[in-house]
Length: 279
Ligand code: GRG
Image (cartoon, rainbow, N blue to C red):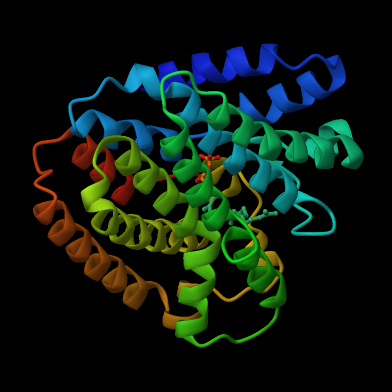
């Protein structure tokens, strides 16, 4: 799946006419991300027996939005990070204005990729755009980023931290799974949404653990939560209790996988890989 996604991303990069913008977008987009969100979307489709190859443009729309959020999150006015995906961040390599515009272009092109799909009818395309914009817009990922910026140096209750993680991390993972369900099986969108919510929380809490326990070389990005004194699960609960909480979330995921009858699927194998990830 990852190769299919990377090939489609390369094709997208070649479609960008302005050489400087193309180089900048290529630098960030083809820098070796894990591609978790587009792969999750395609795996949902595959689990319903549809051909994932037909939906690759929709899959990469998720990676475009994700990469835009990383580029903008790294900017000097946000987290001011210097390393991302194992390389200098885009604003360091190409300048701040190009980084802002590269993020803007990725966000905008993401919706163009969905609206111009040749395989989906207009009704489904509208639903996909609705979910993606709701989950990443003012009451979704952007709200998460607002909460994240405001959390610097603040001791948050766990409830507030969960809300921030839901918005900034779970929401795009929810969108990836729910969009897969919209294309394949609209009856079960609520279960897919619940799965995305818990998987996203687990993913973000694991990120806290990895930041605490691994080096910058291995995680491939600056330890900005530590540097900027942002609250994390580890800073609030400590490492051991955080790991116990991750186990509880794993149990919740198993229950939903059971309800979706997915134990034999490659999607479940992927989820297990995400649960046990080390970068
Ligand atoms: C819109 C500016 C803006 C920000 C939105 C998503 C986000 C908020 C900020 C990005 C930084 C961050 C801590 C995101 C939380 C989710 C997360 C752990 C992202 C890293 O995702 P991976 O591990 O990255 O999938 P790769 O590089 O593998 O794609």
